[in-house]
Length: 98
Length: 479
Image 1 (cartoon, rainbow over the protein chains, first blue to last red):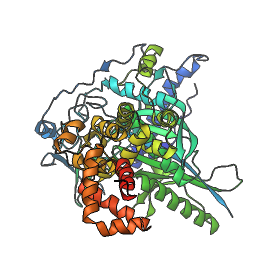
Image 2: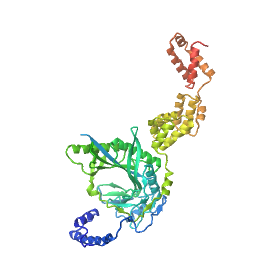
Image 3: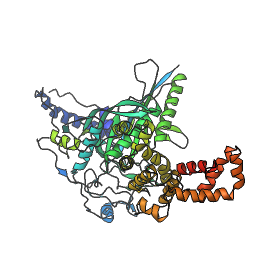
Image 4: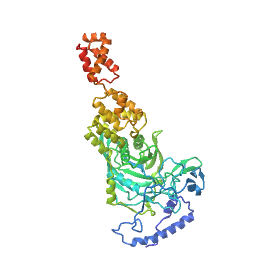
């Protein structure tokens, strides 16, 4: 594959904003290079001819395991909230959203 | 210029399972804050989702009822966005491989049968609930990961009314199937509407606007109506409709902009690596097919044919399956479907309305109502007494008693004994000799007066036909 970059700075900025990350200009350059290299490496896969092959979702042929619809209680609300930085009663308290 | 309104609906139905989609937490409503939560639905690191089988059963059942193709290969996908009531930072949903595709649903709109296309039905998890308090927000994750079905229609609706009627019928179907309780106030059934307008004759669709979270049938109609009007005004004044998500405000009856599509809708779907593919084989589909009940529209058509009922009556009687069941029990036991329908549509619905009860809590059992009708039809009690008896039963004071017991206990049986009736007639004629003279002199109008007096004396229990016949005979002079 060519070493031409697979990703531009604009895309990096968009991904950062969707992931709610604030990047410095230096980081933007660094990640553009690094992510480009990763994509270049992975693109070796496109050398394989996949015509007429169904795309796979997972690497194995295994199917999902089901659970029967029976209630089991694992934790109390106090246990669930025990790691929360802030709480109010049995509710998680977070910075304002609206 | 004439415009055409184009609408497609996305309906979210909360499923009536005991547990959540990917964990064994209860789905019970109204419990304490974060009572129904665990490491999985609060997204603790390392917790893995395990699929609830009943959700797939319900999805297949709903798909079959809506004439969909059930796909054998199914995958869950992650829909990525940030919001504090979505603890994982993504919602597990289905994207490219929904479980049901390509269906259709027929329903009645102002008495006419109409059919619209169902694009897809997929399974997904609900988010939690957040409340906002200015300097902070509070999060309750009881709803997090509660299973939902999203039922997406084709853009086949051409009027707000049509969309609302579809929504009503779809709710009725979901209740028949027992997959959703249909409670719109609690948000267990809600819909988003995609609305666009185009000039009549145009074949291309206009720019569509999504209206979010409509939670009543009336609002479906009003929100679409308002939004179509807003779009037409924009076009008429030379402006463009922009693709966006809007929220319906029922208090002001208008829609307000939430966010523009471009910035918010980059969900970066990808197959969830925590969940393996689901295979739905024919055997599974066949098993569910056997559980498919008779659906409301089929039942309606059968009622019209089998019981010879008008369409309107059949529509009301089949709206809820419990109501249909009640009717059929009364109709079969009384052998008088027309009377059964009349009593239910009239007096019973009135009583239920007054007592704010639904049919499963009816104070009069189907058996009692059937017996009541049998007693009228065999002339044991009069229609008037039957009404009294019905209202008496409606008080709920006679629960557990049979109609026959109540009739004899309260001495309500109709009097058909001619001797007994003659005694009363003689008494009334003696007491009203003046009126007797008038009648015999040709003033036949006083006949009604005598009927009234006799019935009053007999507390309404005289058989009207016999009373009439005997009165005529005696008044005419035949002693």
